[in-house]
Length: 95
Image (cartoon, rainbow, N blue to C red):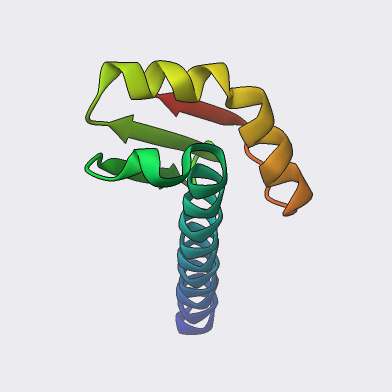
């Protein structure tokens, strides 16, 4: 019984580490994309990136409605950029 519990804990630990690695990689790649697309125009704006492992989704929250609209317009290029980096998401939500 304790051996099974240990295996479950090990699996959860591995999933947590994998999720953290993916989250860090995703944050780094999204920031690269934003710098490539918008350049210096992003100074003064804030972004909150939130990756959900349950449904393999990314939520991008911005401090400006115009900026979120611009991101929505460039969602196709963001998706292609992430696919090129071998990051597959089921859903991207921009607020």
